Length: 270
Image (cartoon, rainbow, N blue to C red; front, side, top):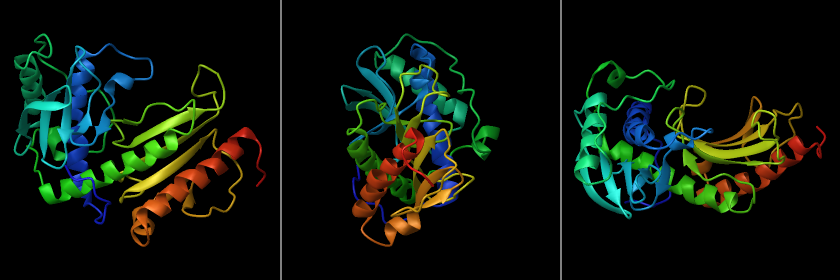
């Protein structure tokens, strides 16, 4: 699996198809896992050499999506034991086939049908019954963004004691983590800072890193890199690719997340 620094901005059509593809393993896993209050059972994780994978099912199996290969798979102890291409598969057929594949591999009791996760996602033809069209070149470029982001985000996440695990959420298709400044159990009330990568969305069509202070601050101080987008900070793909991506992203995540922390803690004036 490619682990290079991204150099290409994936096309929107490929990103949308991959977004829905991630909901195939997410739907199967969430159907079998114990529900979590923060919906963490629905989330995927990035694993170099595999791609986007679910939490462990039955202690050893995971289901996942290889963007580089355009496949969904069943893995046991980080080794893929079965997989199939998504190309021309319908969404529900792919979900059902993955569930059966997991069962046949010994990873779960047979439990069909598996429903699609009840989430809000951007419109796409696969939601209406069309088959997936896998563009391996574009999906591989997207894989590079996710792999690169996971390494840069983990580097910053590991420096914060209260940070959550790095997760990819199937509704937004972003990968990120969050740390809190309070012990408040209600996440809507606790002060926090989130960091992540969106591969693109209705706000910004190309990939971008973000730093999200909560609650949204009134002050908008100047940033050493990146820009403000409403109440949060973004670093867009064009700026990343115009220089040294590693240096630029690490600076954004490090310095801008520090600014965000000061803003939500009340230690920085506008």
